[in-house]
Length: 277
Ligand code: HEC
Ligand code: HEC
Image 1 (cartoon, rainbow, N blue to C red):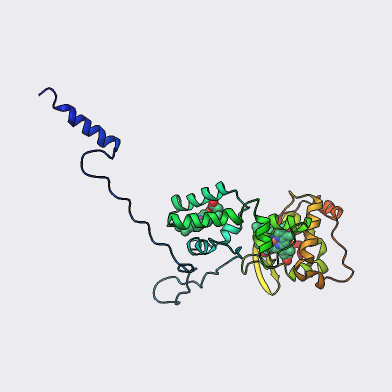
Image 2 (cartoon, rainbow, N blue to C red; image 1 turned 45 degrees about the vertical axis):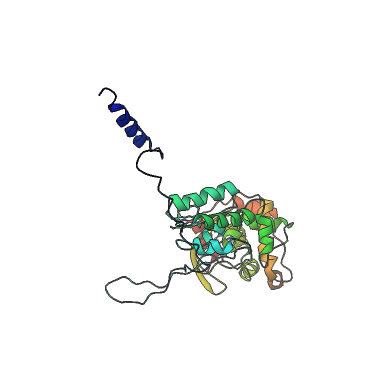
């Protein structure tokens, strides 16, 4: 009689501690992993039929798909990382070390509930680690069509300060970021001082660029030096064939012009007001 409570207590303890050796049969097998999706299996939001009842109908959402470096794992990224947001969310980030990408992926899965099977997550991670880290991003941009030579000072500033939005090939993203191909050369010809203010202080307000309308906000880059900003302005007004569109006598941007404009310290809306139509 005196010994009876002991096995009961032991069983209770085992249950409480969740030990797999607890009485009640072998541990349950882990659930089977969901199958890998073929690339393109999940599309960006589909257009829907308008006015089919008492529901609010909207136009198809724009699918903003940035250029992604070719490489193993890209298909997994496109299939699994463009259901909730565009893959532009990935290319908009500053290049992260592998551990940073791993933490981002874990956040997508655990915090936001992204149902990315582990095998696909490993493929995505390997792809990001191979092409989108501080060490590999230069080669990635060179691999993308129209990418600049990596040793030009302006091209280097462009890659980290502008390309996340305006894209490595300068073509922008429709509805989000204006193209600089063609447009930057036009601005350099007609609105040179505006370009300097824009680079320093950003801009907010409606504009037309290369025949498209934009109404968004660009942050300024006043954390960059006068030399860096002059170099990047020379780069965007000459790269991608823009040099052929500049007036023959167009002078390069100089650091002292940037230095003088820096003292004005404007808001992005003030830059827009001074831009003119
Ligand atoms: C279930 C929806 C969902 C899926 C699937 C998803 N994400 Fe996200 N993601 C989010 C949400 C929500 C945010 C935060 C949006 C915000 O803050 O504006 C986000 C933000 C991000 C950001 C911005 C930086 C950050 O940490 O917030 C990155 C980078 C990103 N996602 C990468 C990925 C990658 C890579 C994948 C594919 C493995 C993925 N996402 C799949 C929901 C998702
Ligand atoms: C965070 C995204 C982002 C970054 C980074 C960015 N831009 Fe922009 N850029 C925009 C947006 C958005 C607009 C449109 C602003 C508007 O609607 O007024 C724009 C507009 C422009 C224009 C057209 C301006 C006009 O008035 O027609 C030029 C030129 C430009 N950016 C150059 C640059 C350069 C050079 C850099 C890097 C130093 C840069 N941008 C960095 C988002 C960005």
